[in-house]
Length: 259
Length: 351
Image 1 (tube, each protein chain N blue to C red):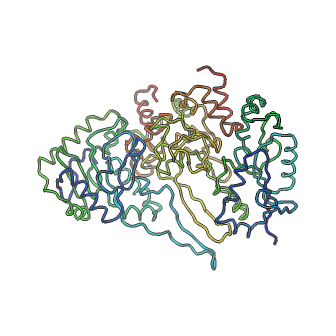
Image 2: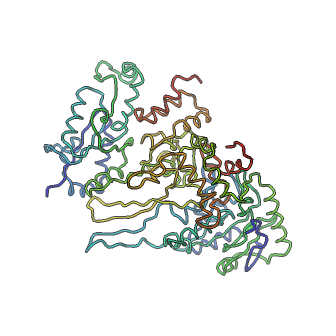
Image 3: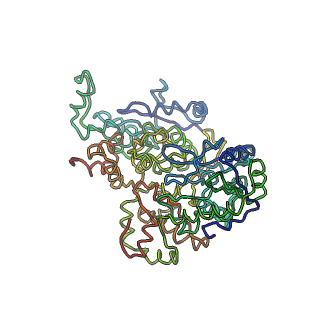
């Protein structure tokens, strides 16, 4: 029996998520023993034609031609996994969905005239059916591995879709939100990072996007009580996963409100 | 338990000077690692201690319980490798350890966990750690803002269940030994026999602490009252506030629920089954084949409140709440289940 083929596609992104695949170093050799890395331009020049068994798609759609890449990936792949904040919720570049792209270009780039990009940042799921969303900025190595192993074993991956708080308490961390009144999105954010930021004394930025049934209204009230302005709350919800439905809702509650 | 702990059953009662606490920690350390309340990021959590200087034995509102030392946040249940079939291997055994500074409410919680993990489905992982743990409890001589142990009959004084029990007197520490091992530890510490005056001082301190309780939950007929108010509109308000973050269940010293999962290596020839904390506020918790039987956040929050103040009684013939006040202290939305339950007595609205 031939080995399952893996493909990795890239759209508008920083490549940090596909780098996590390469970062599976201790088990990378075992991995290439079990699967064929068929299409992964970042790691290998070799390209094996599809169809592929598992395909990871990183990044968001910011240009028309990227829609074609997404459609091709869908056609080529049995299981399509959208990964990262960009692949699941538009990513940080999704901020332009709520602003003028020209303003961003001018603020960010020295030669804005060299930049070719569309008005919006869309996650691939807005154009094709996605079988599994693997959030994170970047995705977690352990979760990435779990997805591959689960696919090889033919079972559902165990990703633990809980709020960051659950993981945070498991780490014996003192709750920042309560003890030091540090704004933290932990209660509404999905875990996967191992509660990385709160473990180092920083409030959760929400990189993994909203957890299931995230109560953004209550979260917003708590942030407001901590003294955040409506604008700051909108920024927090939009930060990395502005396209995620619950965070979009959270931002909407405070958008345009005066302090 | 009377919660005042005046008649603590002890084999030996001695008084050690101030510096005796350090000697005591070091005596325990000769038997294995010692864990106790230490300051961290503006709160008190259990961590490994080497001497008395590491300990913070005050009763302050921002504390964590010692639950994690007995019911591990993550516990490997077994490892297996593919050979002739899969051969499971038990995880390594833990050695002797001591937990110092356990408060009376937490001692009551440990008794509750003992029941949970021994009754219907004996749990070797918990039991092993529990049997390996020497418990050096400490009576409370002050009450924090959210404490309502006096309502639950779990404090501020402890009556039984300890290896060692400390009480801070004006001059030095009263140490009571409840087990032979406790007596043995006590022998390694400089001390004198306790007098009736010392014991009177202890009783007085505990009575004074109890009188300082600011919070109250009437427990008489509470499970029935909770049942009657199952559809009370106040639960809808709590639903809007609850974040579903499970801070309450994580910090609760009696919450014992866990999830289990397998980590398989890439080659598919090694597996590690691990269990980890989870709780009813998490959506995934009640997801079973075919659906989720508590898909509504309000139902999930109610499950926490009702398990503690109602269902626990049917299950274990006591309440699941020990009055430590942690769930309300650590709730980012400041939800207070005791106050909610107490409001039913007044028939009025409350947080």
